[in-house]
Length: 166
Image (cartoon, rainbow, N blue to C red; front, side, top):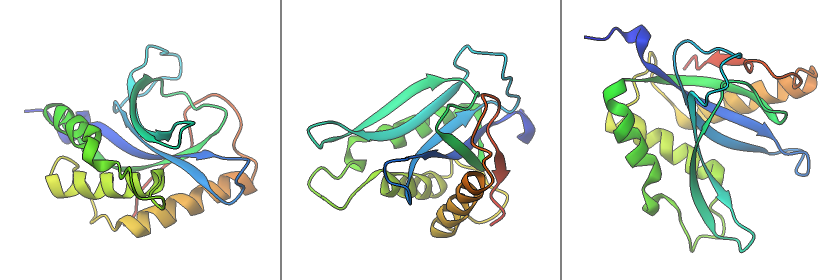
């Protein structure tokens, strides 16, 4: 049986949106326990929704590296996912019913909030503390604002990462 330490990590990731200064882009990132900035083989999976030019939201899953992008502010580790549960995580996140096509107030932040809640309720996300999703989002927003305030959003290395304290 695989130990807890060998499981994937699920991170809530924030990106800077300079056009909308008070807002962030949000995504979920599944990464291996041991990340290496020199490994550019796409060892992580990014999950999010994007709004197309026609205004329609679309789910996107893509392989990426652990290395931070120019707009990535940081990430909060929400919990762990076993190797066996990865397929179920992908099914939950890719469910087309998650996207509310006819709700003009729905956005990617709501997608992330609902996705985290669903992963916790499905039992595929193992956490050390109970996840209060509104508190988690507030915590991630505070962390991101601190990165911006201190000018730490530079460089292509592992992004600033903190563990959700609950």
